[in-house]
Length: 446
Image (cartoon, rainbow, N blue to C red):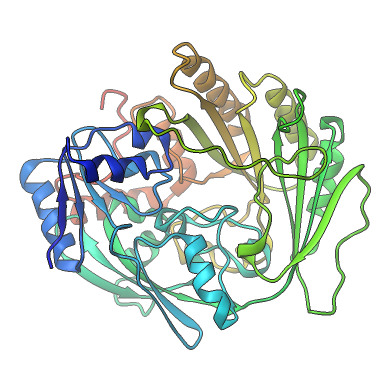
Protein backbone atom coordinates (compact mmCIF):
# COMPACT_ATOMS: atom_id res chain seq x y z
CA UNK A 1 0.00 0.00 0.00
CA UNK A 2 1.21 3.50 -0.77
CA UNK A 3 0.99 6.73 1.16
CA UNK A 4 -2.35 8.43 1.70
CA UNK A 5 -2.52 11.92 0.21
CA UNK A 6 -5.01 14.44 1.56
CA UNK A 7 -6.09 17.71 -0.06
CA UNK A 8 -8.06 20.77 1.10
CA UNK A 9 -11.79 20.16 1.08
CA UNK A 10 -11.52 16.48 1.97
CA UNK A 11 -12.99 15.25 5.26
CA UNK A 12 -9.82 13.36 6.19
CA UNK A 13 -7.74 16.47 5.53
CA UNK A 14 -9.86 18.39 8.04
CA UNK A 15 -9.69 15.52 10.53
CA UNK A 16 -5.91 15.36 10.30
CA UNK A 17 -5.60 19.05 11.12
CA UNK A 18 -8.29 18.90 13.82
CA UNK A 19 -6.19 16.24 15.56
CA UNK A 20 -3.28 18.62 16.15
CA UNK A 21 -2.76 19.79 19.74
CA UNK A 22 -1.19 23.10 18.76
CA UNK A 23 -3.85 25.67 17.94
CA UNK A 24 -1.62 27.70 15.60
CA UNK A 25 -0.80 24.60 13.56
CA UNK A 26 -4.40 23.35 13.56
CA UNK A 27 -5.58 26.65 12.05
CA UNK A 28 -3.20 26.37 9.08
CA UNK A 29 -4.07 25.41 5.52
CA UNK A 30 -1.38 23.12 4.11
CA UNK A 31 -1.31 22.54 0.38
CA UNK A 32 -1.18 18.80 0.93
CA UNK A 33 -0.95 16.25 3.77
CA UNK A 34 0.93 13.01 3.13
CA UNK A 35 0.50 10.07 5.51
CA UNK A 36 3.35 7.68 4.65
CA UNK A 37 3.23 3.94 5.27
CA UNK A 38 6.85 3.11 4.42
CA UNK A 39 10.21 4.84 4.36
CA UNK A 40 10.09 5.08 0.56
CA UNK A 41 6.88 7.12 0.93
CA UNK A 42 8.85 9.55 3.10
CA UNK A 43 11.59 9.77 0.46
CA UNK A 44 9.00 10.50 -2.24
CA UNK A 45 7.32 13.17 -0.11
CA UNK A 46 10.65 14.88 0.58
CA UNK A 47 11.50 14.88 -3.14
CA UNK A 48 8.04 16.22 -3.98
CA UNK A 49 8.56 19.12 -1.59
CA UNK A 50 11.96 19.81 -3.18
CA UNK A 51 10.63 19.70 -6.75
CA UNK A 52 7.76 22.06 -5.97
CA UNK A 53 9.61 24.38 -3.59
CA UNK A 54 7.24 23.57 -0.72
CA UNK A 55 8.02 23.96 2.97
CA UNK A 56 8.13 20.48 4.55
CA UNK A 57 6.50 20.22 7.97
CA UNK A 58 6.62 17.01 10.01
CA UNK A 59 3.80 15.98 12.33
CA UNK A 60 4.53 13.51 15.13
CA UNK A 61 2.80 14.40 18.41
CA UNK A 62 1.20 17.55 16.98
CA UNK A 63 2.39 19.91 19.75
CA UNK A 64 4.70 22.13 17.73
CA UNK A 65 3.70 25.29 15.90
CA UNK A 66 5.88 23.88 13.10
CA UNK A 67 4.00 20.64 12.41
CA UNK A 68 1.82 22.46 9.84
CA UNK A 69 1.91 25.69 7.84
CA UNK A 70 -0.04 27.47 5.13
CA UNK A 71 0.93 26.23 1.67
CA UNK A 72 3.20 23.49 3.05
CA UNK A 73 3.51 19.77 2.51
CA UNK A 74 2.73 18.18 5.88
CA UNK A 75 4.27 14.76 6.45
CA UNK A 76 1.95 13.14 8.99
CA UNK A 77 3.85 10.30 10.69
CA UNK A 78 1.17 9.83 13.35
CA UNK A 79 -1.19 7.97 11.00
CA UNK A 80 0.90 4.87 10.24
CA UNK A 81 4.43 5.20 11.69
CA UNK A 82 3.31 3.88 15.07
CA UNK A 83 5.21 0.63 15.63
CA UNK A 84 6.83 -0.07 19.03
CA UNK A 85 9.10 -3.12 19.32
CA UNK A 86 10.86 -4.02 22.58
CA UNK A 87 13.90 -6.30 22.53
CA UNK A 88 15.74 -6.86 25.82
CA UNK A 89 16.42 -3.39 27.25
CA UNK A 90 16.07 -1.52 23.94
CA UNK A 91 12.96 -0.37 22.11
CA UNK A 92 12.52 0.59 18.44
CA UNK A 93 9.95 3.33 18.06
CA UNK A 94 8.56 4.81 14.84
CA UNK A 95 8.29 8.55 14.41
CA UNK A 96 4.53 8.91 14.90
CA UNK A 97 4.49 7.52 18.44
CA UNK A 98 3.67 9.84 21.35
CA UNK A 99 5.76 9.59 24.49
CA UNK A 100 2.74 8.66 26.63
CA UNK A 101 1.84 5.81 24.26
CA UNK A 102 5.44 4.61 24.48
CA UNK A 103 5.31 4.55 28.29
CA UNK A 104 2.03 2.62 28.17
CA UNK A 105 3.57 0.05 25.82
CA UNK A 106 6.64 -0.43 28.01
CA UNK A 107 4.80 -0.69 31.33
CA UNK A 108 3.63 -4.34 31.01
CA UNK A 109 7.26 -5.32 30.39
CA UNK A 110 8.53 -3.54 33.50
CA UNK A 111 10.43 -0.91 31.51
CA UNK A 112 10.25 2.89 31.23
CA UNK A 113 12.01 5.93 29.78
CA UNK A 114 12.60 9.44 31.08
CA UNK A 115 10.19 11.56 29.04
CA UNK A 116 8.66 15.01 29.40
CA UNK A 117 6.13 16.32 31.87
CA UNK A 118 3.13 15.60 29.61
CA UNK A 119 2.08 12.42 27.82
CA UNK A 120 1.09 13.64 24.37
CA UNK A 121 4.27 15.11 22.77
CA UNK A 122 6.03 13.01 20.16
CA UNK A 123 9.41 12.92 18.44
CA UNK A 124 9.86 16.68 18.65
CA UNK A 125 10.40 16.28 22.39
CA UNK A 126 12.56 13.18 21.93
CA UNK A 127 14.88 14.78 19.39
CA UNK A 128 15.22 18.25 20.92
CA UNK A 129 15.96 17.15 24.50
CA UNK A 130 13.13 15.78 26.57
CA UNK A 131 13.06 17.29 30.07
CA UNK A 132 10.85 15.50 32.57
CA UNK A 133 10.34 14.41 36.15
CA UNK A 134 13.10 11.78 35.98
CA UNK A 135 15.71 13.83 34.12
CA UNK A 136 17.74 14.40 37.27
CA UNK A 137 18.09 10.66 37.89
CA UNK A 138 17.97 9.20 34.35
CA UNK A 139 18.95 12.06 32.02
CA UNK A 140 17.23 13.61 29.03
CA UNK A 141 15.05 11.58 26.70
CA UNK A 142 17.58 12.11 23.90
CA UNK A 143 20.31 10.64 26.12
CA UNK A 144 18.50 7.30 25.74
CA UNK A 145 18.88 7.28 21.93
CA UNK A 146 21.19 4.56 20.60
CA UNK A 147 20.24 4.68 16.90
CA UNK A 148 18.31 6.89 14.48
CA UNK A 149 16.77 6.09 11.12
CA UNK A 150 15.37 8.66 8.73
CA UNK A 151 15.53 10.61 5.50
CA UNK A 152 17.69 13.68 4.96
CA UNK A 153 16.00 16.75 3.50
CA UNK A 154 17.83 16.03 0.23
CA UNK A 155 15.94 12.71 0.02
CA UNK A 156 18.77 10.41 1.17
CA UNK A 157 17.82 7.66 3.67
CA UNK A 158 20.23 7.05 6.55
CA UNK A 159 20.80 4.99 9.67
CA UNK A 160 23.14 6.35 12.35
CA UNK A 161 24.44 4.98 15.62
CA UNK A 162 26.88 6.44 18.11
CA UNK A 163 29.76 4.40 16.71
CA UNK A 164 31.82 7.19 15.15
CA UNK A 165 30.50 6.60 11.61
CA UNK A 166 29.42 10.24 11.24
CA UNK A 167 30.07 11.90 14.61
CA UNK A 168 28.99 15.41 13.61
CA UNK A 169 25.64 14.28 12.18
CA UNK A 170 25.09 11.94 15.15
CA UNK A 171 25.66 14.80 17.59
CA UNK A 172 23.60 17.41 15.77
CA UNK A 173 20.63 15.16 15.03
CA UNK A 174 20.17 14.77 18.77
CA UNK A 175 19.11 18.31 19.57
CA UNK A 176 18.65 19.81 16.10
CA UNK A 177 17.09 17.10 13.91
CA UNK A 178 14.03 19.17 12.81
CA UNK A 179 16.36 21.45 10.82
CA UNK A 180 18.07 18.58 9.01
CA UNK A 181 15.98 15.48 8.40
CA UNK A 182 12.79 13.50 8.92
CA UNK A 183 13.42 10.96 11.68
CA UNK A 184 11.28 7.91 11.00
CA UNK A 185 12.56 5.60 13.77
CA UNK A 186 14.60 5.75 16.96
CA UNK A 187 16.09 2.96 19.03
CA UNK A 188 16.15 3.82 22.73
CA UNK A 189 17.73 2.32 25.82
CA UNK A 190 15.07 1.69 28.46
CA UNK A 191 15.23 1.52 32.26
CA UNK A 192 13.62 -0.72 34.84
CA UNK A 193 10.19 0.61 35.82
CA UNK A 194 10.09 1.78 39.44
CA UNK A 195 7.45 3.13 41.82
CA UNK A 196 7.35 6.91 42.08
CA UNK A 197 6.41 8.98 45.08
CA UNK A 198 4.77 12.26 44.13
CA UNK A 199 3.97 15.24 46.33
CA UNK A 200 2.02 18.21 45.03
CA UNK A 201 1.49 21.37 47.04
CA UNK A 202 0.10 24.87 46.55
CA UNK A 203 1.83 27.85 48.12
CA UNK A 204 1.58 31.62 47.92
CA UNK A 205 3.82 33.52 45.52
CA UNK A 206 5.62 35.06 48.51
CA UNK A 207 7.01 31.62 49.39
CA UNK A 208 8.43 30.95 45.95
CA UNK A 209 12.03 31.98 46.66
CA UNK A 210 12.16 29.63 49.64
CA UNK A 211 10.67 26.84 47.51
CA UNK A 212 13.34 27.39 44.87
CA UNK A 213 16.15 27.32 47.43
CA UNK A 214 14.83 24.09 48.94
CA UNK A 215 14.51 22.50 45.50
CA UNK A 216 18.09 23.34 44.54
CA UNK A 217 19.28 21.49 47.67
CA UNK A 218 17.50 18.24 46.77
CA UNK A 219 19.51 15.12 45.88
CA UNK A 220 19.61 14.14 42.24
CA UNK A 221 17.19 11.27 42.86
CA UNK A 222 14.43 13.85 43.39
CA UNK A 223 13.02 16.59 41.19
CA UNK A 224 10.87 19.51 42.27
CA UNK A 225 9.26 21.29 39.33
CA UNK A 226 6.92 24.27 39.57
CA UNK A 227 3.99 25.90 37.85
CA UNK A 228 3.21 29.57 38.44
CA UNK A 229 -0.33 30.30 37.41
CA UNK A 230 -3.92 30.77 38.52
CA UNK A 231 -5.64 27.74 40.14
CA UNK A 232 -8.96 26.83 38.52
CA UNK A 233 -10.91 27.74 41.68
CA UNK A 234 -9.21 31.09 42.25
CA UNK A 235 -8.46 34.42 40.64
CA UNK A 236 -5.09 34.83 42.36
CA UNK A 237 -1.82 33.39 41.06
CA UNK A 238 -0.09 30.74 43.17
CA UNK A 239 2.78 28.24 42.99
CA UNK A 240 2.39 24.52 42.39
CA UNK A 241 5.35 22.48 43.69
CA UNK A 242 5.56 19.03 42.10
CA UNK A 243 8.08 16.64 43.69
CA UNK A 244 8.85 13.23 42.17
CA UNK A 245 11.15 10.56 43.62
CA UNK A 246 11.81 7.09 42.24
CA UNK A 247 11.82 4.71 45.22
CA UNK A 248 12.12 1.05 46.15
CA UNK A 249 8.85 -0.77 46.79
CA UNK A 250 9.33 -0.42 50.53
CA UNK A 251 10.64 3.15 50.52
CA UNK A 252 8.88 6.21 51.87
CA UNK A 253 10.96 9.13 50.72
CA UNK A 254 8.59 12.05 50.39
CA UNK A 255 9.98 14.93 52.46
CA UNK A 256 7.91 16.30 55.31
CA UNK A 257 5.26 18.71 54.09
CA UNK A 258 5.56 22.33 55.13
CA UNK A 259 2.70 23.73 53.03
CA UNK A 260 -0.98 24.12 53.74
CA UNK A 261 -2.31 22.31 50.69
CA UNK A 262 -0.37 19.07 50.16
CA UNK A 263 -1.31 15.91 48.25
CA UNK A 264 0.82 12.80 48.29
CA UNK A 265 0.64 9.59 46.36
CA UNK A 266 2.57 6.66 45.02
CA UNK A 267 2.26 5.47 41.44
CA UNK A 268 3.89 2.53 39.68
CA UNK A 269 5.23 4.40 36.67
CA UNK A 270 5.56 7.76 34.92
CA UNK A 271 2.38 7.23 32.94
CA UNK A 272 0.38 7.18 36.21
CA UNK A 273 1.58 10.54 37.56
CA UNK A 274 -1.02 13.30 38.00
CA UNK A 275 -1.05 15.90 35.24
CA UNK A 276 1.57 18.59 35.62
CA UNK A 277 -1.10 21.29 35.73
CA UNK A 278 -2.36 23.75 38.31
CA UNK A 279 -4.86 22.01 40.65
CA UNK A 280 -7.67 23.47 42.69
CA UNK A 281 -7.16 24.08 46.40
CA UNK A 282 -8.52 20.60 47.14
CA UNK A 283 -5.83 19.02 44.95
CA UNK A 284 -8.24 18.04 42.19
CA UNK A 285 -7.36 18.61 38.57
CA UNK A 286 -10.13 20.00 36.38
CA UNK A 287 -11.17 17.88 33.44
CA UNK A 288 -9.40 18.76 30.24
CA UNK A 289 -11.77 20.95 28.19
CA UNK A 290 -13.04 19.44 24.98
CA UNK A 291 -11.16 20.72 21.98
CA UNK A 292 -13.22 23.14 19.91
CA UNK A 293 -14.70 21.30 16.96
CA UNK A 294 -13.68 24.28 14.81
CA UNK A 295 -9.93 23.77 14.36
CA UNK A 296 -9.49 27.50 13.73
CA UNK A 297 -10.78 28.41 17.19
CA UNK A 298 -8.23 26.56 19.33
CA UNK A 299 -6.10 28.43 21.84
CA UNK A 300 -3.11 30.22 20.30
CA UNK A 301 0.27 30.38 21.98
CA UNK A 302 3.53 32.32 22.15
CA UNK A 303 6.03 30.27 24.11
CA UNK A 304 9.65 30.61 25.16
CA UNK A 305 11.74 27.99 27.00
CA UNK A 306 14.90 29.42 28.55
CA UNK A 307 17.36 27.70 30.90
CA UNK A 308 19.23 29.11 33.91
CA UNK A 309 21.85 27.75 36.31
CA UNK A 310 21.39 27.34 40.07
CA UNK A 311 22.20 29.97 42.67
CA UNK A 312 20.01 32.76 41.28
CA UNK A 313 16.90 32.12 43.33
CA UNK A 314 16.35 35.65 44.66
CA UNK A 315 16.53 37.33 41.26
CA UNK A 316 14.63 34.52 39.58
CA UNK A 317 11.81 34.55 42.13
CA UNK A 318 11.43 38.32 41.83
CA UNK A 319 11.28 38.26 38.02
CA UNK A 320 8.86 35.34 37.79
CA UNK A 321 6.43 36.29 40.54
CA UNK A 322 6.23 39.84 39.18
CA UNK A 323 5.60 38.48 35.69
CA UNK A 324 2.83 36.07 36.65
CA UNK A 325 1.05 38.82 38.55
CA UNK A 326 1.14 40.91 35.38
CA UNK A 327 0.00 38.08 33.09
CA UNK A 328 -2.60 39.38 30.62
CA UNK A 329 -5.06 36.55 31.32
CA UNK A 330 -5.46 33.49 33.61
CA UNK A 331 -4.49 31.11 30.80
CA UNK A 332 -0.87 32.26 30.90
CA UNK A 333 1.53 30.25 33.02
CA UNK A 334 5.21 29.79 33.82
CA UNK A 335 6.64 26.28 34.28
CA UNK A 336 10.00 25.51 35.86
CA UNK A 337 11.23 22.06 34.89
CA UNK A 338 13.91 20.80 37.29
CA UNK A 339 17.05 19.49 35.60
CA UNK A 340 20.69 18.98 36.58
CA UNK A 341 21.83 15.70 38.14
CA UNK A 342 22.18 13.00 35.48
CA UNK A 343 21.73 15.58 32.70
CA UNK A 344 25.16 16.95 33.66
CA UNK A 345 26.78 13.51 33.52
CA UNK A 346 26.85 13.47 29.72
CA UNK A 347 29.65 15.51 28.08
CA UNK A 348 28.53 18.83 26.62
CA UNK A 349 29.76 17.71 23.20
CA UNK A 350 27.76 14.46 23.27
CA UNK A 351 24.75 16.08 21.55
CA UNK A 352 23.51 19.43 20.29
CA UNK A 353 21.65 20.00 23.56
CA UNK A 354 23.76 22.67 25.29
CA UNK A 355 21.79 23.16 28.51
CA UNK A 356 23.49 20.52 30.64
CA UNK A 357 24.74 23.01 33.22
CA UNK A 358 21.26 24.39 33.88
CA UNK A 359 19.18 23.81 36.99
CA UNK A 360 15.90 25.06 35.52
CA UNK A 361 14.23 25.08 32.14
CA UNK A 362 11.67 27.88 32.36
CA UNK A 363 8.73 27.58 29.96
CA UNK A 364 6.85 30.85 29.44
CA UNK A 365 3.42 30.04 27.99
CA UNK A 366 1.46 32.97 26.68
CA UNK A 367 -2.00 31.78 25.63
CA UNK A 368 -5.10 33.44 24.25
CA UNK A 369 -8.34 32.60 22.47
CA UNK A 370 -8.47 33.64 18.79
CA UNK A 371 -11.95 35.09 19.31
CA UNK A 372 -10.27 37.85 21.33
CA UNK A 373 -8.76 39.80 18.45
CA UNK A 374 -7.04 42.30 20.74
CA UNK A 375 -5.34 39.71 22.97
CA UNK A 376 -2.54 38.43 20.76
CA UNK A 377 -0.35 41.54 20.88
CA UNK A 378 -0.53 41.86 24.67
CA UNK A 379 0.17 38.17 25.31
CA UNK A 380 3.11 38.08 22.91
CA UNK A 381 4.53 41.21 24.51
CA UNK A 382 4.21 39.69 27.99
CA UNK A 383 5.99 36.50 26.91
CA UNK A 384 8.72 38.42 25.03
CA UNK A 385 9.29 40.80 27.94
CA UNK A 386 9.78 37.88 30.32
CA UNK A 387 12.18 36.24 27.87
CA UNK A 388 14.17 39.48 27.72
CA UNK A 389 14.22 39.77 31.52
CA UNK A 390 15.61 36.23 31.85
CA UNK A 391 18.07 36.40 28.96
CA UNK A 392 20.85 37.94 31.04
CA UNK A 393 20.55 35.05 33.55
CA UNK A 394 20.35 32.30 30.96
CA UNK A 395 22.87 29.67 29.96
CA UNK A 396 20.76 28.01 27.25
CA UNK A 397 17.53 28.12 25.32
CA UNK A 398 15.52 24.91 24.96
CA UNK A 399 14.54 25.22 21.32
CA UNK A 400 11.34 23.19 21.43
CA UNK A 401 9.74 26.59 20.75
CA UNK A 402 11.26 29.22 18.50
CA UNK A 403 10.26 32.37 16.67
CA UNK A 404 11.81 32.69 13.19
CA UNK A 405 11.24 36.00 11.51
CA UNK A 406 11.46 37.93 14.80
CA UNK A 407 14.20 40.11 16.24
CA UNK A 408 14.83 37.51 18.97
CA UNK A 409 15.46 34.52 16.71
CA UNK A 410 19.20 35.13 16.33
CA UNK A 411 19.53 35.28 20.12
CA UNK A 412 17.45 32.11 20.45
CA UNK A 413 19.71 30.17 18.09
CA UNK A 414 22.87 31.43 19.77
CA UNK A 415 21.60 30.46 23.21
CA UNK A 416 20.45 27.07 21.96
CA UNK A 417 23.50 25.94 20.03
CA UNK A 418 26.43 28.20 20.99
CA UNK A 419 29.56 27.15 19.06
CA UNK A 420 27.64 24.29 17.40
CA UNK A 421 25.64 26.81 15.39
CA UNK A 422 28.31 27.16 12.69
CA UNK A 423 28.49 23.36 12.31
CA UNK A 424 24.71 23.20 12.18
CA UNK A 425 24.57 25.79 9.39
CA UNK A 426 27.15 23.83 7.41
CA UNK A 427 25.37 20.50 7.80
CA UNK A 428 22.02 22.05 6.93
CA UNK A 429 23.44 23.36 3.65
CA UNK A 430 24.56 19.79 2.87
CA UNK A 431 21.50 17.88 4.08
CA UNK A 432 18.80 20.47 3.21
CA UNK A 433 20.10 22.24 0.09
CA UNK A 434 16.66 23.55 -0.87
CA UNK A 435 15.85 24.76 2.66
CA UNK A 436 12.53 22.93 2.85
CA UNK A 437 12.77 22.17 6.59
CA UNK A 438 12.51 24.82 9.34
CA UNK A 439 14.86 27.73 8.81
CA UNK A 440 18.05 28.85 10.52
CA UNK A 441 17.76 32.16 8.67
CA UNK A 442 17.69 34.96 11.26
CA UNK A 443 16.43 37.69 8.94
CA UNK A 444 13.25 39.40 10.18
CA UNK A 445 12.09 39.61 6.56
CA UNK A 446 11.52 35.88 6.03
